[in-house]
Amino acid sequence: MPQDSSLEPYAAIGVLIALVVVTAIGMLLVAHLIGPKRHGPVKDSPYESGMPIIAGTDRRLHIRFYVVALLFLLFDVEVIFLWPWATAFYASAVHGMTIPLEGGGIAGKDFLLVGMGFFVSLLLFGLVYEWKKGAFRWD
Image (cartoon, rainbow, N blue to C red):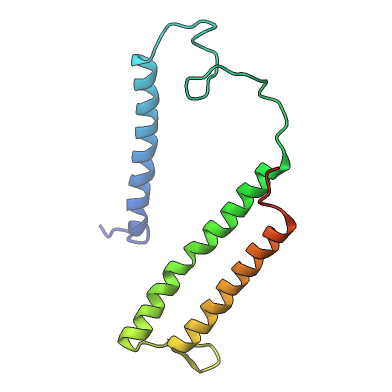
C-alpha cells in the first residue's frame, strides 16, 4: 500500500502544535490543582511590586511617556538592523565576498559602508530632530 508523502513535511509541525496544546492545558491544570485556594479582599487586591495602590488605575498618563516609549522602540529596532549588515560587511571586507544586485552589478564593501552610513545618518537626523523638538525634556 503506497503512502501519500505530500503531508509528510507537515508532520513535525503537527506534532509541535499538539505538544504545545498539551503542555498549555497541563500547566493550567497543575496550577489549578496545586494553586492557592484561599480568597479574600487582601489576597485578591492588585499590587505592583508588593506596594499598595496609591492612585486609581484609570488615571491618564502624560503623552510624554508614550512618546519616549515609541522613540525607544524605534531606535531599538533600528539598531537590530545593524547585525545583519555587520555580518555582510565582515564577509565582504575580510573574505572579499560580493552581493549581486538586481541590475546586474555587484555590491562590495564600499557599497555596504556607504549604505550603512546613509542609514545611520538618517537615525542621527531623527534623534537630533526629536531632541530639538523637546521630546526628551521632562520639566
